[in-house]
Length: 399
Image 1 (spheres, rainbow, N blue to C red):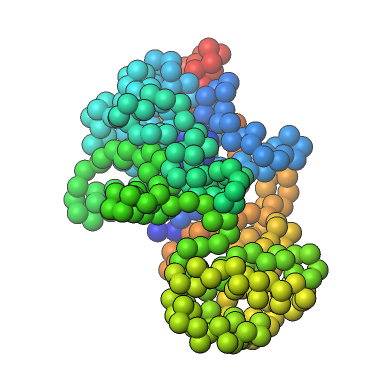
Image 2 (image 1 turned 30 degrees about the vertical axis):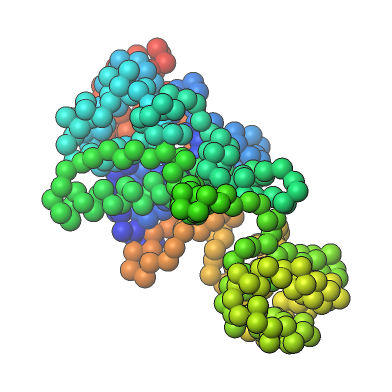
C-alpha cells in the first residue's frame, strides 16, 4: 500500500462519540499512526452504536480502523502519568471530555505542552472550552437544533426536522482533521511549536447552514423552511417517478433550467421575463414543479435519468444503501471498498475521503477489540516493567 501524507505522525485518540473519532479516522486513513485510548471498563460508546454482527459493531469497524487500542484509566494518577509519558512521544492528542476534565486529572494543556512543546492538542466539545455554555453536556442533536439547521429543514407547514444521522459530529470531525493538519503544517513547515485547537460542534455546522445570521443582521429577515425547494433556483425539488422512486433536480445554472423545461415539453416558459434568474424562477416554483412533476410521473426512474442525461440536464436518483452499493459510479471509483477483518471476515466500508495522486493513504486494518494493544504499547514501546503492568491491570488502571 502506498503511504499517506501523514506517515510518521503519531496520534492519540482519547475522544468518544463521534467527531473526535472521525477526525482521527481521517488522519489514520492518510498515514498517521493512531492509538485509541479507552477506559478499561467503559470503552468508547461508538463500539455499541448502530448495527452489530455477532456482537461486534459495524460502525466501530470503520471509525476505529487504522487505530491500535489501549485501555488506560486517565482518571487514576498512575494512568494520568502513563498518558503524559505517551504524550511525550506523540505529535497529536485528540480529546472530547467535558471542558476542564483533563485539568482536573492533572494533564491539561499547560502540563501537556510543558512535557511536549511540539504537541498539537485537539479539544472537541459541544460549545467550546469557554463561554457560559462550556460546562453543558452536548451532543450533535443539540447543536443541530441550535445551529439553524433544524429550523430550515422540513416542510413549511411542518415542524423543524433533525437529521437521521450524526451530521454535526461528522462536519466537526472533518473540520477537526483539517485543523490538525494546519497545526502540523505550522509546526513543521514554519518552525512553530505545538498548540491547542478549540473545536466546538456548533461552529462548523453553523458555517454549513449558511449566512442566515448575516442576512438577519443586515435585513432583519429570518429564513424559513421551504421543504425541498430553494429560494435561489427552480425547479429544485424531489419528484416521484412512475415506478415509485424519487429523483432530485437542481437548476442553479440558467442553462440547466432551460434544458429541463425544454425536455419536459414547456419551452415557452424559457421566454418569460421571470425565467432569467434563479430567484425569480423560485417565485414561480408552483408552475415549474407541476410541469416537471407531471412529466416525471409518467416515466420510470431509469427513463428519467437517461433522458435528463442525454439532454445535459442535472438529475440524480434518491438512493438507499442498496442503491449506493450497486451504483456503477460508486463501483468504478471504489467509493466503497472491501477490507478484511479478523473478527467478521470481509467488510464493505467507505473508502478514503479524497484521492491524492502520490500519497493516497488507505485502510490498513479495521477497528480492533478493546485494549488489544495495551501491553504492546505500554510494555513494548514505553518500557513499563511487565510486573508493574500486571499490577496496574489488576487494579483497573490499564486493561
